[in-house]
Length: 456
Image 1 (cartoon, helix red, strand yellow):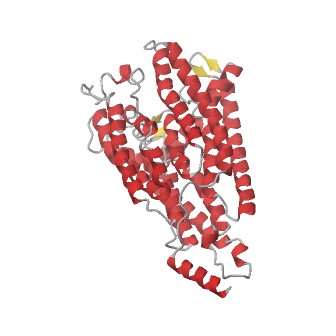
Image 2 (image 1 turned 120 degrees about the vertical axis):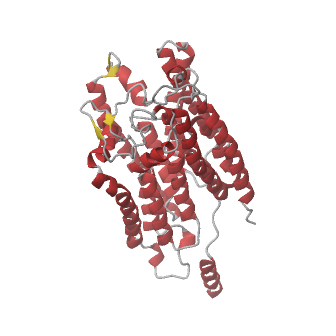
Image 3 (image 1 turned 90 degrees about the vertical axis):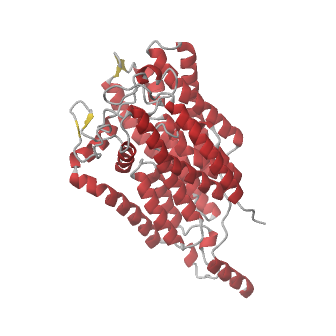
């Protein structure tokens, strides 16, 4: 008997609301009440790391013309020294629009943090509801664990997580044909790509899922001609076209009206070094081997090597995950697009030159939806808390505000514990079944299956 997920979903939303309030209060410890002439909290620089209340939201109140309420990208650029000017931000265009919207009623960094939290929180609640409907009580992993307290309002990541989970929810429903669901999901993933780039991973695996005609409930059991076993090339092409068209439609106005500012955001990320702010295995592992520091800056040789190795290894990890997914399709009859995408995300998080703390929010819904041992989930959350707290204590220690020993221990445990667990999760995700409920077929499909069964 199928049990309802409405109660788990409701509980997940209520607990998520409490956690989001705690997340806001955690970041608001850095904000106000005294401000300078630009609206910057006077004590922000002295407390943001030592008190572990830093957020990119408050940090970027100044330096990107957000405090001037300038619409992003249209008159921006990047200097020869690599600094963004004139309203360009370092994120895709829709994240820039969200930043602008959060700043519209704000006149200080504290108000910007508050209104940004009000703008972002509904996406966190929506994600909790969808995860509850998809996976029942496992959704509490999203709603009632430390990552939301640490990162919900660290950056602008809640909307992109909601689009990714929304795409999964759309494909999982049986209200429309697989092609229709695939196209709608592709549009959502395209929107997500315009917020942060990682939903593009799931667009790749979604194409493979539609190409291979989904799971058994998407195929007509009465069809004995072998058509159900053939590839749906047109459906896969429609998914690609929908995702690509969405990305182009969103980006094109910015590219036409302010090309230098639009291009500058991509150039900024391309030029970003795997330095002390990156939290990556490259900084903590490769850099010491190469002596990759000159004063306070990473050396060109180290940075150039990372710029080559990181994308190559990410692409290699994607290829391995996709190949394992294809083998599972050949063996099981269904391409595991969610689990394969989760494995690819692990490869990206491990090997990308920058691993910002809030990226954990990207991974958390996959830990809900894919059947992973709870002990492994707990270990990852522990390592994440270690890096989420330790790296800021380390920043404070390097500035003479904190003891170095504890800060360094937490940071090393967090960086290497998380790296090891991402390798383990890559393997586990690539092979694991879903934790989420198998949806019931649509009524039309149910009647077809019943008729086919009677005929036999």
